[in-house]
Length: 123
Image (cartoon, rainbow, N blue to C red; front, top):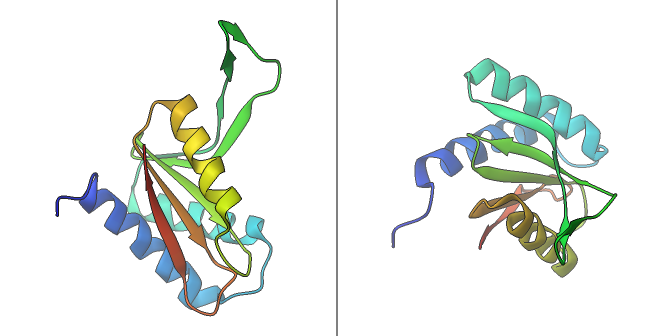
């Protein structure tokens, strides 16, 4: 099976594992985002944090924007969670982010479990 953005997503998940191995579960999401930003910078991986996207509805741009936690390599949305599991609404959120951004791959990474959990969402 040929995975979309295979090498890039493996490197992102590796960084997430590094963060989870060092911090464990139980912190607020912002702590994991700060640690991820540190690791991405250290690795020299291009990313944007809290990237803003406008939502187009029937030809108009709605006044409220959405902000992806990270866009990595200019093509992968990385959504950070600190919950007991990855819920269906997180998947729906990621699909909407992919629609608005024009990207094809989102990674939902959950640091709230004892073992790092993640889902690949393709649109």
